[in-house]
Image (cartoon, rainbow, N blue to C red; front, side, top):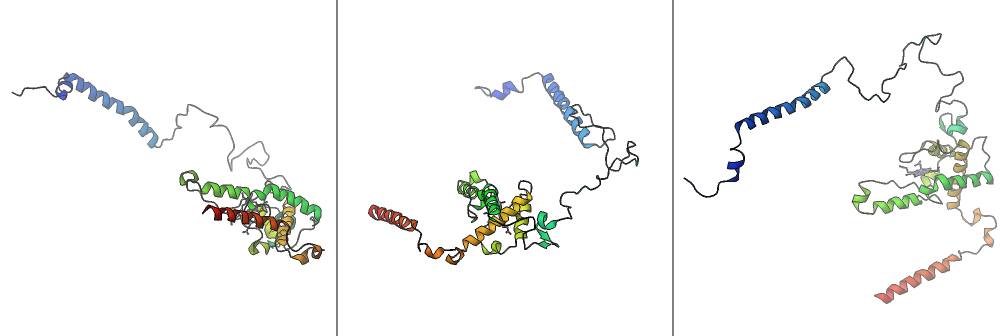
Length: 260
Ligand code: HEC
């Protein structure tokens, strides 16, 4: 006979009355019945509708495609469009003004409704400032505040950027875009391109043409030489701010030199 303290299990499990185990087994089996019923109900197809306690207007009387409706003389529930209706994107009239295309290719000229003058450029500059500058930057070089902010976030810890990527807005003055026709620029603004969304919903047609004109003005200005500006010969050769820039750089250099 072994002496000494008995193990805890000897007391807890094996000394309970027998009936307790039978009741526990029965109750476990009983507890499995409701989930089994639910699983069965969800997995067997049935003709009758499911029990749908909270309706939330899920079922309501309505006509579906190809059904009859005796309210109309032709008994069709599906109605024809009102005569003269033009669906969006199905307009066949003035494609030059509205789509920027002529005979299926990008227009190379401004449409007759648009007069390219200083007023149009001013309008374009203002609209560009609202809709394009945030990404493409004030002079269209693809370095707007949205871009800078995105780069800042991407440079933070990977947990913050969370795998997000960012496509830099295009430099609108680079050759590939400066060589595009006005129709293509208009088309890009209207419908977007690759990662850029279209702005047809926000910017009315005439304003889109104004922006096209301003983008072209930016492109011309980027490559401008003295000859492009009337009376430029009378201007000084260098920008006056240059001197200031140089002094600042020199000061910085000096500081570094002293420190090391
Ligand atoms: C939300 C940022 C954003 C705004 C706002 C935005 N763009 Fe862009 N844009 C982009 C990005 C990004 C690209 C490069 C898309 C790509 O190639 O994936 C791009 C590309 C372009 C291109 C080059 C298309 C080509 O042929 O490759 C043009 C032109 C352009 N944008 C003009 C504009 C104009 C004009 C506006 C204002 C109406 C504008 N964008 C507004 C982000 C923007």
